[in-house]
Length: 138
Image 1 (tube, rainbow, N blue to C red):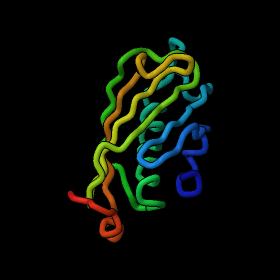
Image 2: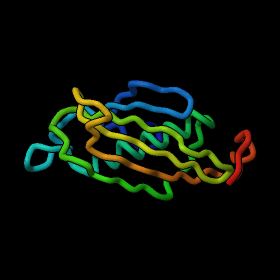
Image 3: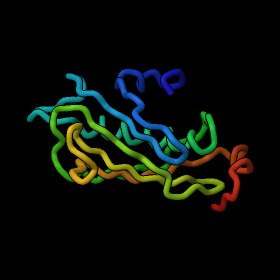
Image 4: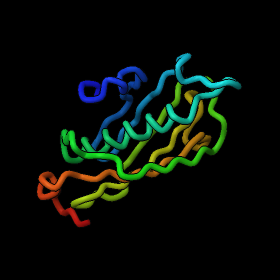
């Protein structure tokens, strides 16, 4: 993703886990993503979720540069600490045209049971790739 969208590299996101249909990422703290009050800003969490969903799609169908976000909803559950954020995303449904996933984000040192945000996202898959998704339905 860093090759296609250089902004992604600025966030410094690290891959902690990568398996079929599931991706775990770490967003390190930085001055660029801290907001007044000593917390992580919402746009950084949105970015983490969007990048994670793209990773989940790639884990299932390979590198597809034209898979695009069509919807991303985030529920902020509690104020994140000014530490790294951990996010775990998974695929809920892979169709021929759309993929739907969800993600929990929590402050490092805590766990998913103390999530700071929950995201649900939908990605549109390019038509030329949909025929290669085994068992797909829209």
